[in-house]
Image (cartoon, rainbow, N blue to C red; front, top):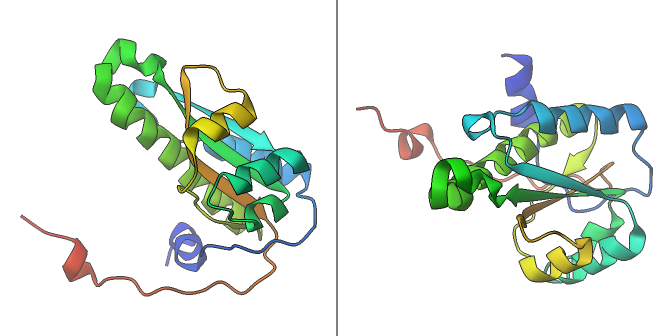
Amino acid sequence: MSEVLKVIRNRHSIRAFKDVPIPERIIQKIEEALILAPSAGNLQAREFFFVTDKKKKIEIAETSLNQTFIASAPLVVVGCTDSTIRYRYGARGTALYAIQDVAISLSFAMLVAHEEGLGTVWIGAFDEKQVSQILNLPEHLRPVAIMPIGYPDEEPFITDRKKKEELIVYL
């Protein structure tokens, strides 16, 4: 089995984090994974906010259906779409391509984080307007995903996966 597939197979969502800082060398790898991910037309219509400020993390957790574990992560990454992609791809670029750009970037970052012994979880349940206010985002940026990152302080809950016959259709 390939190393990448091993990382994918072993990564699971983590919702409890140790109060241990993430070394700068690992932060740089996460940054690189975000940047290297492919994007629609190579426009890279995405921006990421690395939140370490405790007060802001608490505010983000509160606006995320009070998922308090978010604030316990040493790093919270907020992935935002950049609507300036509209000039090239119109409404579809803003409504879909930019979201895909953020999603693949965060997915790459999740895998790098896992490989480095960190835990992550994808958060989609949050109030966009409130997160935009907390981060003081300009009008062209839209938060679409939140990803807490830190050293796991729990064993992951392993979920079942559907069989390939249920998910893959050959034509």
